[in-house]
Length: 133
Image (cartoon, rainbow, N blue to C red; front, side, top):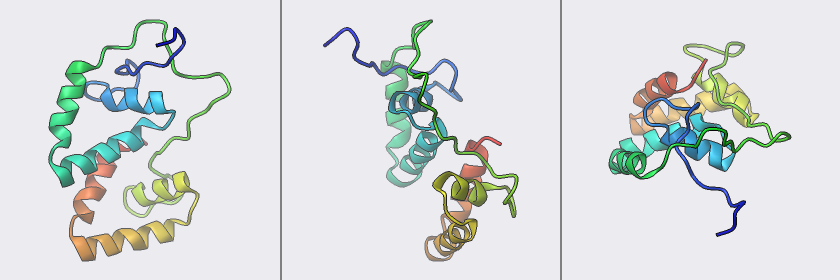
């Protein structure tokens, strides 16, 4: 392994619980909120996400002081609740702003998920809790 290869660490600054999702997001150069949402889907759908999170939290090292993945020219697009285009809690508007699509499209897809699968309401609540303002 070369001296300048990137290593995966738990985040010290982007952490809610153990810093696993924050570390993965920083390592991949994506918003940690996106990683958290995908992890929540794994927990709800596959059931193994919680065990995998705990194992990774125990295995991954803390990021050493003075270490950073952030490059000076690279900015990470952030997934946040919308204040401009919000109907309820700003989740659909925030997702639409992040993806660069109309919030109406996201709301229609979300409503279809609620009607067809029934898990859309729970997913909306989880998103409202995980997504920062």
